[in-house]
Length: 420
View 1 (cartoon, one colour):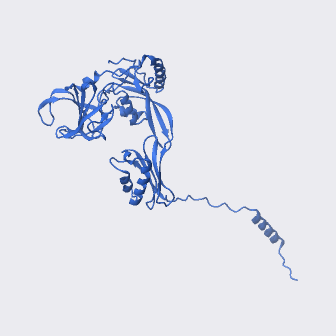
View 2: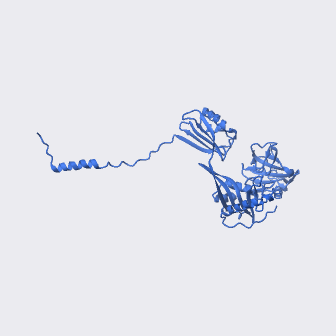
């Protein structure tokens, strides 16, 4: 019988080698590499353009005509598409082949329209109006007008807040301060307000609960209060209403008066001396023009001299005129009712105008009067009823604590009662 002789040293080496192979763990794998997958959809977010329709929006983004019709049919069941408004956010998601996967349109701060296919690759769509979850927060801000922030917009921006809050603050004090002409370096403000934080969407502002503004050494406070059985309004420290019969200005917020009321002024185009029966406000084309008081539209017309013009009739024998508009607001026609602060048109340069501006005129009992002087003499609204003063003082004191939390760089001046 043949025997295989293996040297002892080699045998030991083989045994050790086999044992090592049996007990040693395999070497670790190389580190994993990130794998980047191309997205299978495209998303477009934007704002609805003026004078467009859902049909035009979808077609402009390459949605097939037959799909557009199906989407509109589904959406119309839950939402009146005539209510589509310019500057509202929308979202459009499509497959790479162009199929619509998801469409959203923000109806307002509280809800949005959502349209989606019923199933993958389906040619049927389901639409619904979805509430937007939001959380209420209370915010405060304070700032001043100076060389580095020479406008209220810039001063508010420096606090980290947005232009919408600036406009709301100007509206609160619109019966007391003409923000088109009276804001000066050294003016300061503090404001307490509501803010709604929304999931996956920009936050929005609620109401201003309290504010104070120091203008040329005069401080005005505003406290939001709802009298029993009445509507919410803004009142000063003593419960006097800040609401006036007329707003101080027909522009929400623009910087300057370019020409005042005069019985004899050189016309910039005709080069003849004639009465200037109103006030000219320099403002960019498209700036919103608002009704200074509740009233009725007498006319919305166009002619070569006045351009597009809106004429409103108010109580107590007053009429207001808004000239050189670039456009009329929706619904502004003869006989329509308008509310104080409602947009009635947009600044333009139609008619005899050297550039974009608003000519604002005011008649009292059929005679032209100086709008700036007349507005200053307007009486305030009703004060807090005597029986509600205790409740008002409690709201006022809490509001003042909120304003104190704004931590204004310097204390505002002592209250000075406004001339009424």
